[in-house]
Each structure stands twice: as C-alpha cells, then as structure tokens.
Image (cartoon, rainbow, N blue to C red):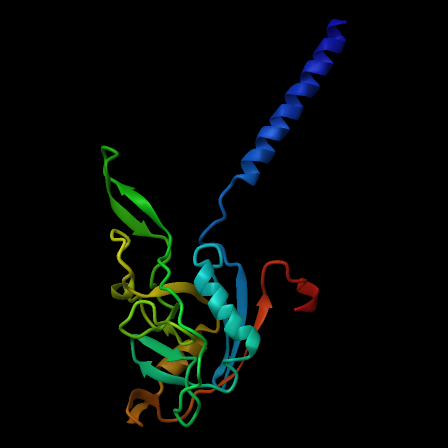
Length: 226
C-alpha cells in the first residue's frame, strides 16, 4: 500500500512539475535580440546577408519585409555614402528619380531595460538594440513618423542616432537589424568615391545597384524551400 502511495505521489509530483515548467516556457517572453528574419541583399558589389529583430522591432520589420516581398528594392541603388558613417539606399533609381513608396510608418522605439545603481534605485533605461557598427536602420526625414522604404547600414558605431529611451517623445532613428555576412561588401560600398548630383550629396560616382533583395529565412518558412 505504502509502495503504491509512493508511486502515485511521485507520478503526481512529476506531472505538476511538468505543468509548471510548461507554463513557464509558454509565458516566456520572446527575445528582442533574436534574429527572426534573414534577407539576402544582392548588390553590384557583392552579396550582404541581413538579420532582422522581428521580436524587438515588429512594426519596422513587418514594413521592411513587406517591401522585400513586393520586390520594391530590386533595381534601385545605394544613393548616399558618407565615409565612416552610413551607406543609404532603397528609394532611388539609377537616374536619381524617387520610386514612390507606401505610406510612412510610425517611429518605433527599440526595446529597453531599467538601469539601477548599487542601491537598486532605477536611474534610467538602456536600449537593447543600438546603432553599433554594421547596424541596419530606417532612414527618415525630420518628421519622426516619416520612414517608408529607405534604409541605411552604419559603417561605424553611431550611437548619436539612437533614440533616448528615457523620454516618451518620438526621437532618434529606428535600428531593426544587422549585417550577418558580407561585411567586406559593406566596407567596399562605404569606400566608394562620391559626388554631388541632381541635388543629392554623397552619391557614388559609379552606381551601386541593388540587384535583388529576397527573404531566405523567416518564422514558419520551410528551410528546405529557401
């Protein structure tokens, strides 16, 4: 009898332990720094693989992926190169006329965490996604909610572009991914001689074309069919 009781009790204990672990896993928040999408950016200078933070910047990533899926970027150029700063593209044809984008999106602030001092007092917040070297982010005009299709890749850490997480007012720029492969291609584009043309500054003398941009990995995608 005692042996049977021990077996039943042990089984129940394992069952409830399993439920507790399962519930804990189901309630676990997605990692904002997890790469959820991978994009192949084929350029006239070589290929670049981009990783997107779909959990941390869901609205911005959805917007960017939508343009990729429509083939919007194919045939456009990197129209702006600022040495030691950024390369920018995704909005102009080779003749520097603008391709009409979709409606602009609302500026999305990167996720942040509390910063505490030694006593445990909260002293501010720190961004989890920042403008480190080789970061992918959305370009915009003066209006914070004006980003549409254009994007840039940083050539160095440019934390001055980061939003201030300690204010609720929209500010800064929206980093939403990073370069995973093709760093040498980014550097090559970033070293191109530039000129001023049709009112645009920092235009590469020789066009740097975006041949094609495609999704090679995303949630729910059959990897065998990439």
